[in-house]
Amino acid sequence: MSYYFTILSPTDTPLFNIAFGTSKGGGDGIARFRFPETAQYMNQFIIHSSLDILEEAQWTNGGMYLKHIDTYPPAAAYITAFLTPSGARFLLLHQPPNLPSSTGTGSGLGSSSLLGTAGSTTRASSSSIAANPTSPQTEEAVRQFMNEVYENYVKTAMSPFYKQGMEIKSPVFRTRVTAAGRKWL
Amino acid sequence: MAGPPRHATMQSISNGSTLQSGDRPQAQPSQQQLSQQSPGLRVPSNRKTIYDRHLNRSRNTELSRASFAFLFGEMVTYAQRRVTGIQDLEKRLNEQGYPLGLRLLDLLFYRSTSTSSSALSSSSTSSSPPNRPLRIITLLHLIHGPLWRLLFGRAADALEHSVSPDTPNEYMITDNDPMVNTYISAPRDMSMLNCAAYVAGIIEGVCDGCGFETKVSAHNQPTELWPSRTVFLVRFGDSVMEREKVLERAGIK
Image (tube, rainbow over the protein chains, first blue to last red):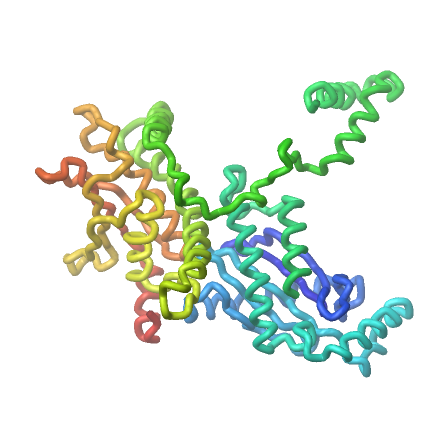
């Protein structure tokens, strides 16, 4: 249901990051992570801790899309990786929605009521890609998403004013990534 | 439109400490307007950013060789103005090529993925995107074939491994007639110079981007048939050779 996407340079500098929610199955595209608002840094912790695994997988699998590489069970966070030939890493953290039984752990009253409505819609579409982070459909959807971001990343990299390792600040790039997320995830 | 208001903004900023804000009533609204309209981005008048353009434009959009020769000649002149010797000049050309190599790598893979999907009908096998090179040989084949075709429209002429047992980390890519040197004639006292050092820089960028630490240099090796024959000497670093052994043991191609 909630996604955190980040691009890291070959030297592990964060170049771009964005959080969004699913837009499939009646989702409104707003990220609702299981951490309280004040602990959103957990996403970055989890996603960066998968870099070690990525660097191992990098030399055993020659594909650009490395699929699901890491799971962090306490937060039910699934990490999918895509590696560009020039070494930039695209990492997507994928957190399925809370099951209705566990919505009580929500941070506040207002947000738990929001979570309740979101939970009811996802129960109706439990086969959706948002709820099944490891299903083949999800892998395919993420692959499409990654490819679309890759296309835009190449366009960024081809700009004469962009040097490898620079933060990607272009608002157009951001809207393009958002649109890709809305389209596929 | 950008000229006058920006000038006014500059003035209002530089005078801000001494003058009261009421002194320049027309400068304030224009500043606000600018920041509201474009937060850090100026879109061209036709509203097309680089993200609206296609990356696959290789056919029918070839560049004129004359303009390339002129541009490259200017690059060499520019580099030459600031150097002390031939080696320094070659190093500068190498550095100019390096970022191009990094970019070409991404572009090359992007183009090969998107063309392989369109060429699906001709090939019976499934069109899986090309793999990132993990081993030295795959990387060198990538440079020798696809990269050379992207740059010069043909494959390089030879790819060799050093025969000497002391230097197993050295590989050679030969181009009989490098396009960059076609319109370059070095003076007699600089006969050692090879401006294909620029291409060597591109190769270095590609290797580095793939995670292969490398030093690449360009050397003149004229033959009677090919007076501007150039050999690119690719020297991989120790870390690459170590990894190569590990990958070979693991049976990864």
